[in-house]
Amino acid sequence: MFTGEATDENGSTSVMAGEPVVDVAEVTKRYGRRTAIAKLTLAVRPGEVLGLMGANGGGKTTTLRILAGILKPDEGQGQVLGFDLQRGANLIRQRVGYMSQRSSLYADLSVFENLRFRAEVYGLDRPKLAAEAAILDFGLTEYARSAARRLSGGWARRLQLAAALIHSPTLILLDEPTAGLDATSRHEVWGRIGQLADARAGIVISTHDLAEAERCSRAVLLSEGRIVASGTPEQIARSAPALAFLVSGTNARLLAPVMEAVPGVIASYPQGPSLRVVASSKAGEALQRVATSNNTSIASVAVRLEDTVLAFSRWPTSQ
Image 1 (cartoon, rainbow, N blue to C red):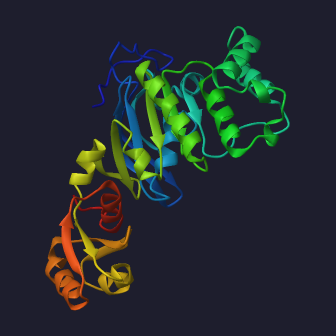
Image 2 (image 1 turned 120 degrees about the vertical axis):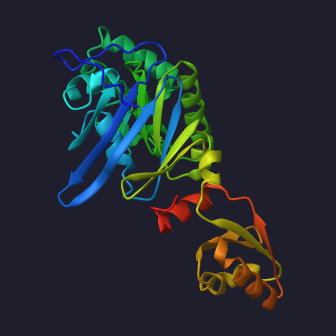
Image 3 (image 1 turned 45 degrees about the vertical axis):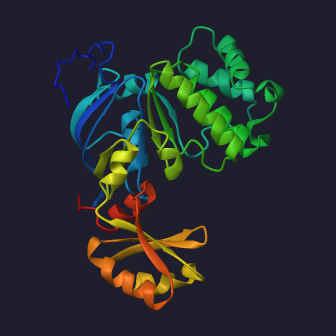
């Protein structure tokens, strides 16, 4: 994956049309004795939406911050937007669009002032015009003179996204971009992401929402800083080291403690009036006996993305 191309004194290589905007290999980052990410290898091409999935502490945010040039990896090599991962952090930061999970807005500045300041940071020739254009583009006209701290969560997130995109980056890194948003606002954010991908931007998204991960063209599942599965969301779901079962019948959901006591069961959770059980293949017969003895039925069903994440979180080295 990593091409190993020669770089100039600024750590830059030319990025040809269709070539990856991210091409890194064996990236490792440690915090003291804890390894946040280990031997991470990623490539992202223009127009691709890559989802980073995994539990808290899995390495998603650390990965984004390294790709944004904010953190320097302890090991690894590659390029981001044609700039050397190790030596070109300043140049990478000037060119990527990065939106952190935490607010990066200046609370006492107005919407317009926040955007103009961000345009100035990125060195745009006409920051005032850029800010005004972003306000129109993101439907922020009504709040242009309002302090950022007065915005609701959805409008503040929209402003953050506008600020991250004001310099028209070709690589966009979004950390939980829809966290705390209602369904309408989430739909708007994903509509924007789709437009950016159609315009050939490469996009990397960290998300806990597995329904949203299914919108990505490709995804990687991180566990304890390592990639344990990658591919399309459908391919990842099929790679689960487990099976899924659906227990149906009166009070099926009340059987969760009994089912979870069966050896090989990873987790159970409600699905409508039924109980969904994620387990190893060896647990099938025991689950059938429990279901029968409690006057319920059990059937094997297709594994979905949530089941896969649960399975890999229990057995991160299984694949």
